[in-house]
Length: 279
Image (cartoon, rainbow, N blue to C red; front, side, top):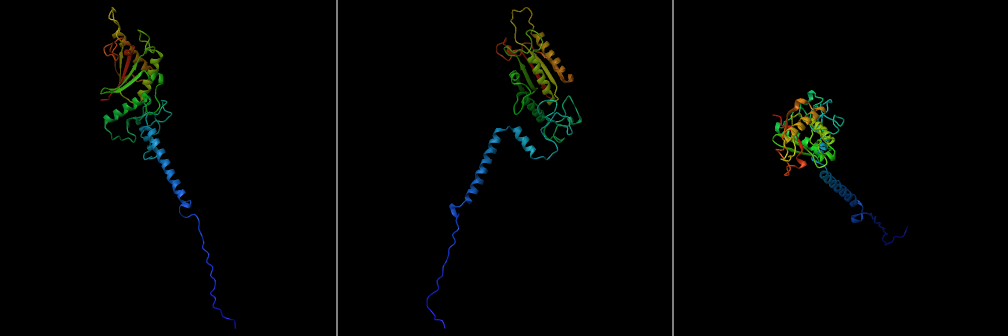
């Protein structure tokens, strides 16, 4: 028989230590990285919203929500949907709907993007004028006119319609002195107006204005010369492609409506082109 003993058995307990708990671990770094990434995306979004125009943001929104087969911001081409593209008649994307006036199609009759425009007629006309004005001034996109010629254009929307004022400056006349012969500057501006006329189908009125002449002249040429320059402008427009039936009136105003307080200032030599409101 084996001898019995009262000695207790020895028990060895091993404790397993797991590292990385609490603030000494790496899990918080993942959450922090996600937070920084989200904040960076948020600030980039805020910057993009501030750096883009309303028209550009609308175009981006339309691109990511294609609920209709054509873009609501179009106008000019005679393609499958009667809209416009970058390869249309003009070098820039125009805002409008339907075909251009030089290549009319049945699609032009539909002024809305989907064929139904729920806005009022007055609001539509106002928007068309604003689009034309923005294109001439180069706001929110490419301008129809060079920066040099842009200095000779002033636009404003009135009850009569959109008034586009083409004016002369010192050293940059619109016509050869005391004649109705247009200068290269006037020819460039005429091309701009004719191209812009494709954005709308409104009638056109042309008015000639010139500066005052000395009262010592035996026969002041203000009436004849202002009328002749307005008539030459009409001929120039039609030669560049403006439909003759769109011209509603051609008027010579002589020196009766001056824009400069000095009656003999060159700034008073100008041509006013009015895109009339459709009744």
